[in-house]
Image (cartoon, rainbow, N blue to C red; front, side, top):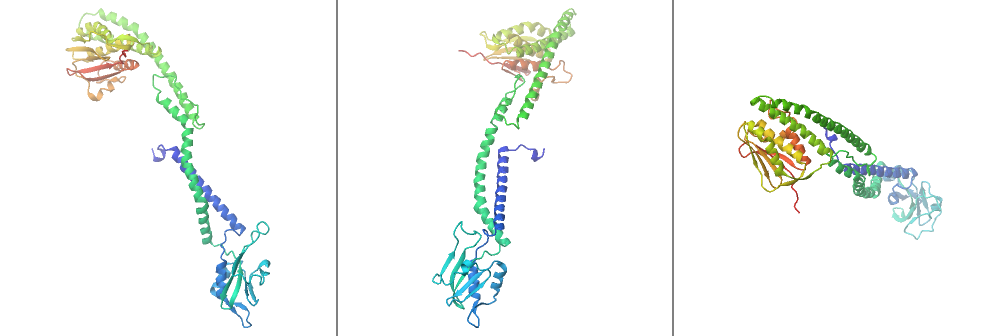
Amino acid sequence: MSKHDDPYCLRSRLSWRLLSLQAAILVALVAIVIAGLCASGFALAERDEDRVIDVVQRALTRDAQGGLALRPTAELQQLRNETPDLWFLVRDRQGRSLSEGTVPAEFAAIGNGLDQISQARLGWQMFEDDPRKPAARLKRVDTPAGNVQVITATQGRLTGAKALFMTSLAFLGIALPGLLLMGTATFIATPMIVQRAFRGLDTAADEARRIDIHQRGARLPVERIPLEVVPLVTAINDALARLDQGYARHKRFVADAAHELRTPIAILNTRLESLSPGPDKTRLLEDAARLATLAEQLLDIQRLDRCGHPFTRLNLVAVAQSVAADLAPLAIAAGYELALDAPATPIETIGDAAALERALTNLVQNAIQHGPRRGTIGIRVSSPASIEVTDEGAGIPADQREQVFEPFYRLTPLDRGAGLGLNMVREIVQLHGGHVSVADGPEGGACFRMTLPPVRKN
């Protein structure tokens, strides 16, 4: 799986993508505004009247008749090249004047009306004149031709460097604060919006975590789920419905098979009883008894699962005594001693007595089948609510103690049995809310322990 397939945080990805989109939109808006202003020809141009006045001041001189003239200086020529709309008007105190470019009639007609003003900016009344008319700059300066008054208004040529500079200023002054504000709002609002939108998904995830094999009919809620995710939730619910149907068919098949096996097993036991005593008869009786127990356990699991756990209060000591009495002849015939260690006082739990008896029977039969045909098989009942079955066999390796409860698992390939007994023991115990485990026995064999919920004493 590539890193692009790894899980990602939707909130973070949405926030960054929204912020990138907002930044792109802001930059585009600034560019559009700048382009529009450039097209209009008045807002972004650099106003540099002081430079015009300085250049004219240094280039101004007198001609032979005493009139005003301009020396062809390099900076004057550069100013003319850079400023296609250049105009200025120069007047001395004697009323002589010099002009260049197209001087607006309004400024040309000023005459000597402002001779007493050293400097000023001449503007226009708002909403009454063409806003594209630039304001004029008036300044009285000393030149080689004497003290003169210079009036000019120029916007200059907007060069690439100036445009870039003005764009940067516009971005820093307009877009950047807006982007920071929008980014802050995005990183605060987006997680809140996503969290609220996905609140229904969190509920569906909690429901999904509680679904197990024993909880059929469960479905994920589609309320408060985003429309984009509804198809996924619906597909999961459809899959759960198909699984429920398959599980129900499987359960019916197993129950029917177990029920059908009871008659041939009973006939088999009858015929085995008619055989002559011997080791073969003993082993066959063990196998037939184990097969009958497995069939009954299958029926127990189906019954408990279908009837919703019809549990009652029961005494584990009585359960152990019943199993010991039933299996004592079988154990003795196989070469074992069967010992029961139970207190005189009852040890109670809530459950199904028949199912627990068959689970315990399976553990004892398992010890008979896999033991060394000698020694003692012990049944011990202890508080608060547990039953142990111990033997003096080879035991179970530590690395296989969890696997022996899996269906069809065998310690050795040539082991007799189908590998279902311990799995059904675990199923029955789990249906009672308990658990089963295996450890080393006190005499070196295996010790299977069923732990059940005790009855709470008031």
